[in-house]
Length: 230
Ligand SMILES: Cc1cc2nc3c(=O)[nH]c(=O)nc-3n(C[C@H](O)[C@H](O)[C@H](O)COP(=O)(O)OP(=O)(O)OC[C@H]3O[C@@H](n4cnc5c(N)ncnc54)[C@H](O)[C@@H]3O)c2cc1C
Image 1 (cartoon, rainbow, N blue to C red):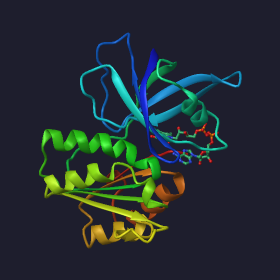
Image 2: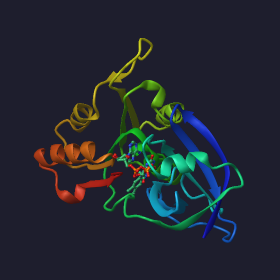
Image 3: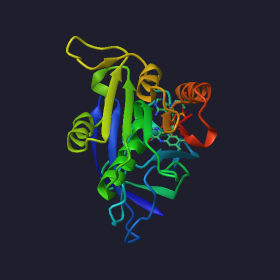
């Protein structure tokens, strides 16, 4: 399928949010948490990469992705070179990262652009209505790279069962929130509970370390739902 870039906006120094449409379909159907598989010829070679969808389905033919420009990368600089009207091939929308049954209280853990699928999943969950307790622990190096900070804070203000914990490892003088890595904050959020699901998304090193922590705490494999970006 051909996807056409409608618009983009820069959310942080190296992070861009893209909105595409797929003119040949009326509506795209996918689960929040799933990713788009995009393909294009880059430097004469066909390259394919996955990008989590940044918004819940709206019943139209648009999809949103949000990505970090990896400076020595191949595909992300190519996507950053696209202008509105340009097209790219959408191979499909795929994935297994999504809300899992049985519905339990959940702790979502993300670093960097690993928060992208959680935006779609949280939009969907709270639009449907839930009495599950959900916490989002979200870390970046610098506060200016925290995506959708106001949106997640507004969700927390509107829903007493949603708790938002942004954290940065290199805080500036004006950062008043949590500092340090996501792992100790996950342990704080869990307390003595093991009857929760932990959803984790980001680069392999963080995902593996969170899974090891959960295993040490006695959680079962099916309670840990994860997506690795590399
Ligand atoms: C299921 C899935 C969903 C993904 N969703 C997203 C997303 O929503 N947003 C997003 O930015 N990326 C996402 N990625 C990563 C994306 O597919 C590419 O790997 C990334 O854009 C780098 O591609 P590249 O060709 O520019 O770099 P490559 O030439 O492939 O270089 C890869 C290098 O980039 C690093 N890298 C990969 N992803 C990131 C990242 N996000 N931030 C920093 N370094 C990274 C890798 O560790 C590796 O060192 C996802 C990956 C998977 C498997």
